[in-house]
Length: 313
Image (cartoon, rainbow, N blue to C red; front, side):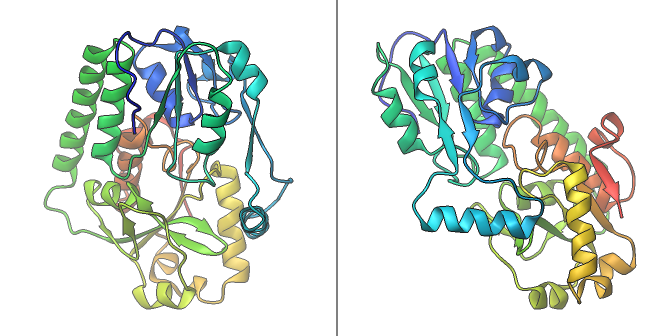
């Protein structure tokens, strides 16, 4: 969603989404970026920008504990993130990029809108709401147009589309493995929004998926009945180390897990979901390449460039 403010291009930017931060840098706008979230860590330069957010959740060590904290906070009507409105006021950006897609993933639009009312001038608030790879392309174009980098945005999207075409050629004619992407483990949750489309682009058949909308909770019985050929575990916000610990917990605590076809055949893969699967930005093509590498047991693209992003279990 873009508000009705039309006119001059934004010269200063605040990003309240890690994916938006990646888009801003990919368009060569890092020098215009005044502030980011505490989770913005790519590219490395983003870590040096002032942080406008912090997590309101207590420390937790595993997926089940995090899930309990999140549900309790949402039930109580509490935000999962704190916004430093005083810092936002001092930075006074022309453009604020935020989201309304997921109250678990980032500071809410309502909190941002309230804080923006205190700013001098007339800042534009843009809410990015991607549910597919095509939506991500459109978001890149939107940020490009708002910042005078329309041509750079078109070039970036053209490059991403070319990579998608090369990936489609790589998997063309191969049998399509039935693939389950777990975006959470306790409870198990299937891939939603853009994730099923990435599985299809990578040559797989997404199962128990929820394309174009929120990830959904699954029953282990349903997973056992579906018995996927490949399981990709990429919990939202987890790096590879945390993901490996989550899979280890499944092996210890879920009775049906050892009998799954994918587990028996050693076709379970851990992916750095925080860096790839859960961020709807330019690196979603990396994600699709990682998926293809897992599904066809042949390193391709991003799996060759980032050997620490994917682990066979």
